[in-house]
Image 1 (cartoon, rainbow, N blue to C red):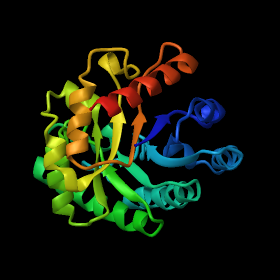
Image 2 (image 1 turned 45 degrees about the horizontal axis):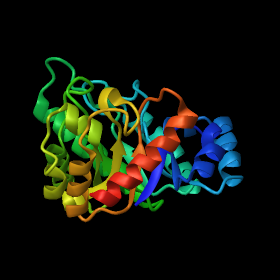
Image 3 (image 1 turned 90 degrees about the vertical axis):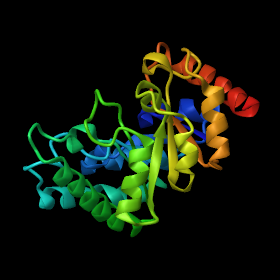
Length: 253
């Protein structure tokens, strides 16, 4: 298993020293050319690549509802996707809860079809750069569409493209009371994993059942990468403690 962390390039040297395998950045950070150039310079000087990206869309870009602007969507994706590939990207997480939230009174069937259309468009663009998509279910408090791994699996099947996978987020699964066994049912689509603990804090700081989660991940046959996407009390200390905890739990599982 490869271990990564969702953070900024300011922490590249620290992650490398502690023993992480990669860093996960936000896609929205690549939209500005000057910021992208600064990120690329930092990555080029590091031994780590940016294998995964989250926060695909800024909240003002909608893919669901009456205000979908395909020119805006296309412009953003055609800017950030090649930049992600240039940094070593392998998987792009599609969470973006504000972008896919269904407005009150908007037909849910139409909203679902809008997401299908968006994911097809995204995947076809991403595939040109060797990038896989990881649909990320989000807890109900953050989005009212696509809340469970089981739903993401159905969406991936409806989209019908092999480059569409699922990001299994342990935090969202736990907070949504979703059976962990659902990652096994969706084994053919698991493309990425996000990790946190109680209160969305760093792994090992809370009460989440990591052994059960890892056993299901192993049963699913997934062995690519997992990213810590969480809060910290003391970043420099907690990333080291978390990595030790995760390696131990993975071995025990």
